[in-house]
Amino acid sequence: MSIDNHFTDGALPLIKNASNVTKRLMMMKIDDIMVVKSYELPPSYRGLKSLTGRISRDYKMYFAVVELEDNSGWKVMRVSDLVTSKKFFNFGVKSKHMENPIPEKNNNFSDADLAQMIDAKIAFARRDITDLTPRGITTTILDTLETDNDNFKGLPSDAELQGDWSVAVDAKEAARNVLESKIGNVRTMVQNVYGTGSSQYHSFKFKGMVSVPDNDLVRVGRTVHNSASKYAAGLLAEGCDAAFLLAFDMLINDFDNKIDLANFAEGDRHEGTATRTTTGNDLYTRTAKICNTAKDVYRETNPTKHNEYVIYHTSAGAPHTVSNPFTVNPMSGTVLVNIPYRANRHFTFHNAVPIPLDVFMSNDGINPVGTTKTVFGLNNLSTVCIDLHTLGDFIVVRNNNPAVIGTGTFTYEE
Image (cartoon, rainbow, N blue to C red; front, top):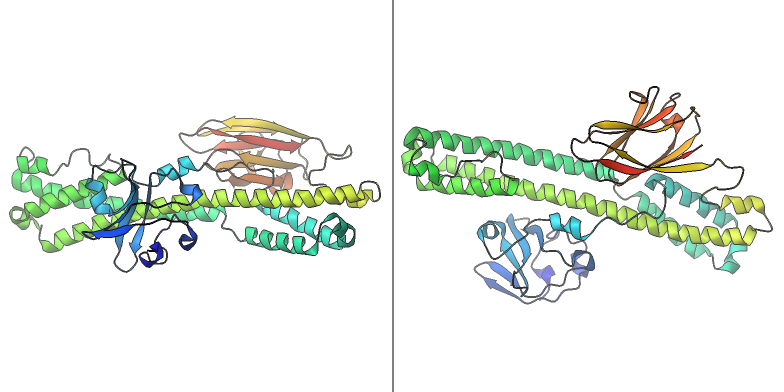
C-alpha cells in the first residue's frame, strides 16, 4: 500500500519528493489513526525521532509521525492525541537540525560570486573547446554545468527564507498573544464566580501560564478550555457560552497551527542553507576540475589563457591576502582590520554562526560610515571596500544578538 494514496500533495512538508522516498509500509486504521509498522525515511532523516505535517489540506487534520519508545515502528497520530500520550517523545522538528548539521563550504565565494565565477569559466572553456575536448572537457559537460549553475542561481536565498521564517514567527507570536488574552478572560470569569482559592479555580491550572513554552501553552489552553466547558453553566453569566467556547477552541487550534508553520519555516531555512552549500560545493568542484585541466593545457603554451583559469590568484604580482579568525561578543563590535583605505581592496567575510552579523566601514573603529552589510548565519560576503563606502580605515563587525557570540573568518588583501 503506497503512502501516496493516503497523503495529499504537500502532506509531508519536511520530506521532499515523497513519491520517490524508499518505504516499507504496513498500515491499518485504528479509531481513525493510521499505524505505520515500518517506514524507512530518506537518508537525511534517519535517526530522526519525529516529524510533523498535515494529513489533509481539506480536513485540516494534523498529524505527527513519531517513533515508538520500544522501537517497534512509527506511528501516525493526531497532534491532539499525541500531546496527551505518554508513549511518545521528542515531538517537534528540532532534532532534525541536530541530526543534520549544515555541511562546510569548500570555497570562499558568496553564492552570487560563485555563480558568476562559474559563468566566466564556462565562457572561457567554450571559447577554448577545441583545445580542451581531447582532455575530456566537452560541450555536453559545459552545458550540464551551465544548467546546474542556472538552477543554483534560482535557489531561494537565506534572506528570503529568513524572511519567511520571521513572518511565520511573528504570526505565531500574535496568535499566542490573542490566546493568552482569551485565557486571561476565562481566569477573570472563574475568579468572579468561584474565587482564587476554590478547587474550581485550581482545576484550570492558570499558574505560570505566561512563562510556558509554546507547546505547553497549547496544552494549558486545552486544559482551560476543558475546565471552562465543564463549568460552563456556572460561568454562563460571565459570558462563557457556546459561542465563546467555540471561539476559544478556534484560537487554540490557530496557535497550534502557527507553531507548526513556524517550525516548518525554520526547517525550510535550514534545508535551504544545506542545499545551497551542497550544490555550491558540487559546482565548485566540477568547475575547479575544468580549470585545472585547462591550466595544464596552457601552462607552457599560453600564459594568458592559463591565468584566465586560475580561480584564486596567487601569483607574485597579485595582492597578498591575510586570513584571520574573529570573535565578537553579544551586542558588541570588533575591528576586523585597521588599514589605509583602498577602494578596490577585496575582502571575504565568513559568518560561522547561525545569527546575522553586520559589517561596515568606520573612521573610528566604532561608528559606521556608508553602507552596512548584513551577513546572515553561515553565509559569506565577498566584496570590495568601495561597495561599503568611499572612506574609512577600519572594517568592523557588529553582533546585535543579545546572547550568542559571533565567530568567523575575515580574509583581506593587504
